Length: 277
Image 1: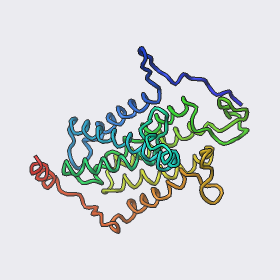
Image 2: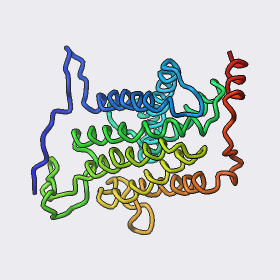
Image 3: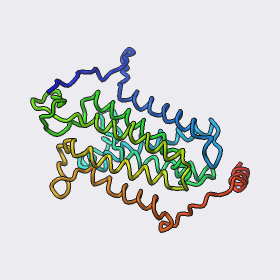
Image 4: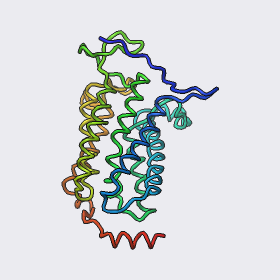
């Protein structure tokens, strides 16, 4: 077993202000997302300028932060919220939820699509390849903070977390690898193949949901929640089930949701943009 590496969570101190590594992983994640989308913009059905990309990323930033915090309070800390409603604003105390962030981003992208006269699912298809590496960086932030301890194990690479005496799976590193580089490679290749509308979005939901389901078997359940269903399902796994089901529908039969998979012609898209301006 290996002692957990002690890493100062504060990356930079400027007088009384501290900048944490966790915050920097979010910043670097957004920049990487922008770079990936910039490399893909020429392969889309509709054109994207750099200004439009920055605007899109700005919407995403607010969606991630607001949705991530609200999702954590709703899914993991609702009792604390009921006893202290102001806790929802105490971001410095930690607590962000991927699933809440996903809902926040979906809402933000829907608003962006409406305001910019773009098809919602074409926007989500475009954004999907930019998300995985940012997610992987977030897991590195979890590792630096010694968060998300794994389940007890005696594998040779087991880590002894601070204040603990038993070896545990480094679950945040497992999640970093699957949700980051592996998910990115698969979704990036899928996006470059230029599939029909909704396929990339659905693929992201299915793959992330499956990867998260797997890694949750190595991650200790939240102490205040424990296992939620069947004596083995965690809250994270339960939240992945509707993701996977929706993703399967988007990949297989989006028409049953009333979604048209026929892309509008460039001329139609251009007319819509001229009308909006």
